[in-house]
Length: 283
Image 1 (cartoon, rainbow, N blue to C red):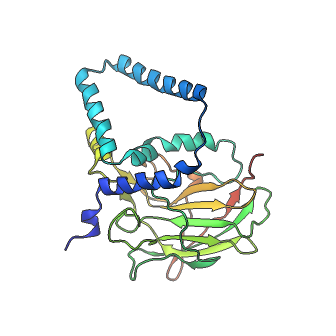
Image 2: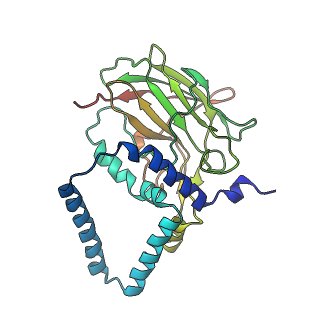
Image 3: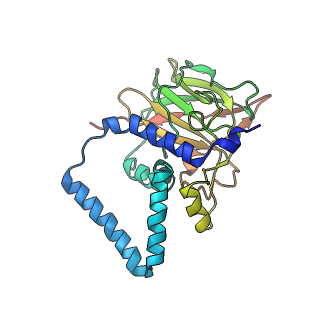
């Protein structure tokens, strides 16, 4: 029998991520002024030129890079490449003014409009979904401490094999994906399973770079969240678990000390209390 683990290729996952980006992100993109495009393009190219001169890059090395860049496109892995190695710096710059909770990268596997589960509920999952039961409770507030009733909490994460629904075959459409709405006190309670660490896809162009550079491909276990409320900035974050060996060397450089959880063992689940503080939107 062919398993999901055997058939979830980097190319298929990358193609899904590319199409999702085109449908979800490009519609609202505002045109960048030509002078800004010129500035950024010139400085990026100058940085590349500087690296070539500094390290005396050969034609063989240049052609290897050219071949690899072509392969990234053919494998549909530009979203993966950019989200793993570039997005964390964009996120850092974009949120440096924020007063509320720290955020981090969205990654390539977010899907909007996940099923709504109210203030307290369980994410969709398969019968006998692998993983330790996890109960996550928290409260959403503004930076002045006031509760934000009706705040939206979107949650998604990989399964025990490191695969995301809608990006790997054989997984139900909304598996381990759901939206929740905070109650009148800003509180929520979410039931899911604890995710496992996983490797990003390595059978495509990104995997070839990792192998050639002798890097590892591991991401620590994490929950993805988006938290939003009217009049406040959207918070996109990932929440991590203490003791994971890849918290210190995450391939995506997305772990921040402020995003580490403090799980507590309950009778049959790990209860997590993690409040979110949302900053107000700038005028």
